[in-house]
Length: 219
Length: 219
Image (cartoon, rainbow over all chains, first blue to last red; front, side, top):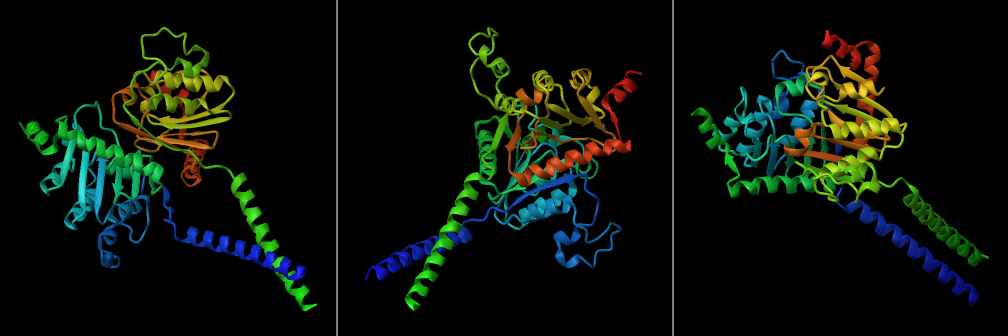
């Protein structure tokens, strides 16, 4: 009788541990995955990125640039184009035409794009901010600081892209730069909050729509 | 006999699970903790930071700045001053005298400080690079890119500080900027690798010691 009792106790204990193991395993397997922690360094080699905009063009594009090569820039481009619902961009200098094309593609796809930029840099030679505005994308400018020097984007409120890289041709292909891509909530959430704070500020008249500023520059 | 065999098997299985649980617990308890994921936004209010350099001065400093207030800048300063063995700094523009004082303090404390900077920006008005060199800190300059535009530091090879913030007075107190502080290995390790790669490059004659460059500028 005692022997059976001992066996039952042992069986009970082992069953308990097996259950804990299985529950832990399921919890680990099904909890939200936090897997993206990438760092990309620049300068990035200039390669053809047509296939990132249109995958079917991979073997058809006849431009003279190298084809089918992954670079820091092409990975950055893929992350930006992965947006399916929203893109919040806070950028000091924006003159890179390929990145502008990516933003326009997102806008035409129905992604809600909001852009915050610097009051002085929206009007520099080659700036793409006017093109975004003309396409109907809402761009606002920080007016109450010396420079709005951020260079970050939040994709679908799930992915943070941030670093030293301005969205210019020279920064991408000539400078030593870095870009972090992460979905770590403790890093991403403060940037979402900061973007919303800066964006909301515009309602208090401390920012102008870029179109108004461009008009005043034209005058 | 069969009964004993079953019991032995059950005991064996339960012992196995208990062992796995204990090993997992010990592994979880004793593995390096990854707890730092901070984001700091600027501009930062100008406050007294004397007590960060000398904690005993908290109630003694009579400067006109506000005292005892934590800001983004004071937190950045604390992280930098937490270095006990090494500080690797890769910075585009460095003209902030308080941050220069922090670096000199680390150097005098025996911390091995290595600084990589931009060839054009080491000679701008107010640059602190010459002061670091005169104190005996090794500073190298990237010569084979348009701009060495990084703004990151690695403290004791355990903490990454990176973002949009140049180490200037204007960036800290006037601009909209961000700084990430993290010990996430997947983010930190690539920066350690990039710093070492850029630093080693100097052995191949692609960089000059800043002192050489300053001499050539003086000429």
